[in-house]
Image (cartoon, rainbow, N blue to C red; front, side, top):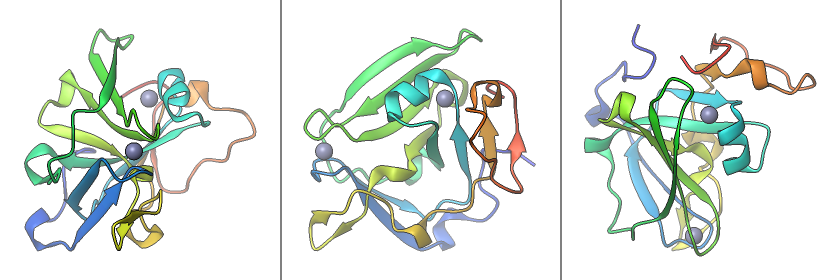
Length: 158
Ligand SMILES: [Zn+2]
Ligand SMILES: [Zn+2]
């Protein structure tokens, strides 16, 4: 099983829309089937949380609604892979992560937000987010954090 690619045809799935808190950045995607929780230190600083949750989406299936270019921060992972993390420079919400290792994909923040009546509510609706399928960088997990059930687990990135 490819941990990153979709199991079913994205064209047959319902579309869900998310946004940052202020609504400048908005994304419509086929409802995602895969989500990872990354406990690495770069994601934790980016998220301001103990882990960051990402939906795996093919670039070709993302409608960005003409969202402006976000602020980005580029780092090299321990593996040497280039990692780019983006956030809204208006409201500060994390938006997406891209990596050289999977250049056809975007790892959209599951907390990207849903828009109802043009007002961003700050999070994708719970029913629009799959259960986590993968947890990474468990060597950086806080000892009090519980693991999600049924996930593929790695000590570091992959
Ligand atoms: Zn925003
Ligand atoms: Zn990470």
